Image (tube, rainbow, N blue to C red; front, side, top):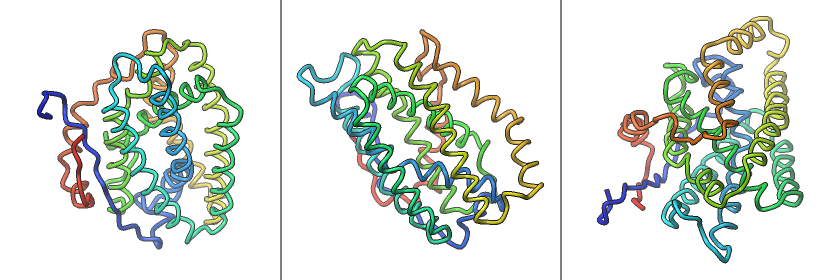
Length: 281
């Protein structure tokens, strides 16, 4: 708790040791499950820069932030996301050592976010940010529940994802509360969530296929069987239920209580070992 009784908001400046020789199979030896994470990371630096800039547009407007969201929370969100951005740039550089074609894809991602900014309104950008924050919170929750990472996953890669997941759950409500507080319509965030399903999911699947092809695993029957098991798993079912919950008029990110996960992983010695400095907001 801070001196005024408000909860402490942590920004953890972390640095992870990533082994490029393990880039393709770091998640328990599974090439497929490693490349799913790798594909997701590719979109994060440019996406997180977009999120921070979008929320800053609101904080800089004449009326400032709406009731229910403080400048302290907005700054906390921006600072956590900025550290994530830096770490995932390093992560992507590590992956690119094994998959050099990824450098071209990263340029495509950067240009895509520039195009999104040029073609959307402030309201749509905030809706898109709230939508993607919900998607990342789903993935973060499943990760911290131990449903996406193998127990014998490489320490550097796995701990980076746990650290990132912890902070995503910590600030999961900031952008959503901003959007709702400004009185923006449910219809726009629903449209954005459908757009994410169609566009982002397709891009992620294509990149994952390219990464698997580079490892000569795209035609592997074992990999396709593993994918089928993943899609039919309880983890996938939980992800879909949480995805569709976003469309409810009464939805709020805190409908799912993540306090136990945050407490557990906030005190995790593995995460703390990679944190160079923690700053309380």
